[in-house]
Image (cartoon, rainbow, N blue to C red):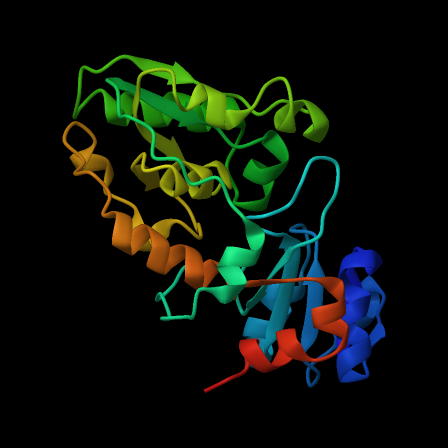
Length: 252
């Protein structure tokens, strides 16, 4: 198996399967070996699809990471996000995370979280502003609710301390619209409906843009079922290295 991208993310799983890091040239020439990838800008998915190969993607985890540290890493098979279907799981793994799942009261405003320009490049979108303008125009066809924009602070530390998404989520928000931001996961976790216009782990509980004026309340039981599922979609580096991640990803 070949690995490509951020070594600190890829190596634990790569060691478990006995693989090695590869160059970009080796990835382009690969027609037989599965691949492990970290970092969205890569030819790995295209190469894998072309030759019928499996590929595994590793990125920051969905839930449970504390301020200034990354303990949990999402790992997906043949996709950048775990989009479902939801698998029924036990709750012990989720309970260990001790998440704050306070259900926030829904308000009246629509919050849009635009993707960064680097994310837009990955999906062939001209720019964040172009995406935002198009989405606002579409939303106005379905609602006259006030629209606010929540751009992501550049600093991860600031996002986790003085300018938190969950604080903005409590400012009279009725629903959140994203491309694929993890803000969708946080929103659903706190009971605020979302619309995902791209690949997102919140898709199993997301609504459609045409519903934006009257999205139903999220069912608390389904939120917990989904969170239990997500707890099995992310792993520590030790779990990657010692086979727990590999077993969960490839269980029948």
